[in-house]
Length: 325
Ligand SMILES: Cc1cc2nc3c(=O)[nH]c(=O)nc-3n(C[C@H](O)[C@H](O)[C@H](O)COP(=O)(O)O)c2cc1C
Image 1: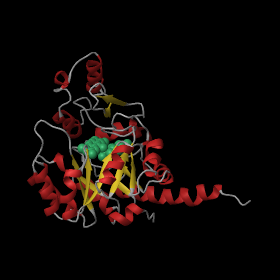
Image 2: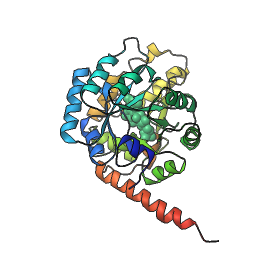
Image 3: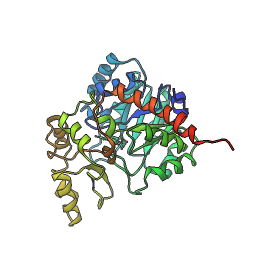
């Protein structure tokens, strides 16, 4: 067993979190991670309405009675989703852990804490982690530049970002981005983190709903096969390199504006990739860590081998480096 401030504060057996994933973070995957002793997280906005989220949480609850989280990604939007309604559904469903991301969680903190919900805020910079601690979150996940999805604009890799964060804040810190196995878990603990958050690694498991062609692509791909889109718009996202992402980068570099690429990057097209396995149908998130992923295990196998492997590295390999005198 690996006991950390995260496992103690959040009541989770292993220091392993499955981060929120648009279109991917559904009941089956989240329940499998929770059943394996990690923290499984359902992604709220994958569900078109708050009522659908309530149904999805019920489905997950039928599959696990272990701690379960919900991700609430708060993004600037012309037509924002009804965050208050999603929040209410989360509380009514008895969820006790929420992963917030995207923006300062302060407007939501009183509600969550009043309803006995712990908040794990995910961010990509030390200054945002410091701010999150100041507004009362219970833990911070910090995403290095390697990560899938939105790495921010600072381009600070985890090897620097994680210890920079852990030396500035006192609440539990979860290292995120670029972690796929026991080596990453031990490294994160060595850097001062209290656990790890993984996206890409959990995409490529048996219980993840995405098409087998996408999982196999993750297994075959190398760390070079991602693309950073929206850099000129300062809204960078790390996604799979394919026909669409390459085209979007070329267009924006040549001076196009968001409206010019809007249809190419539409969320429904990304969803089509996951559902149909057409790898060029749209933009889909994936991290550089795909270069380390070589199989499609069950979640239970993955979590077990990470924990057992981490214990072995700590007690044998690292312990064995210490010599008397
Ligand atoms: C397919 C996919 C979708 C994601 N969608 C979201 C999201 O909606 N909200 C969010 O906070 N993070 C999202 N992320 C980021 C993950 O929660 C996690 O922080 C990231 O994957 C960690 O990097 P890794 O992939 O190297 O493990 C997504 C990641 C992936 C792979």
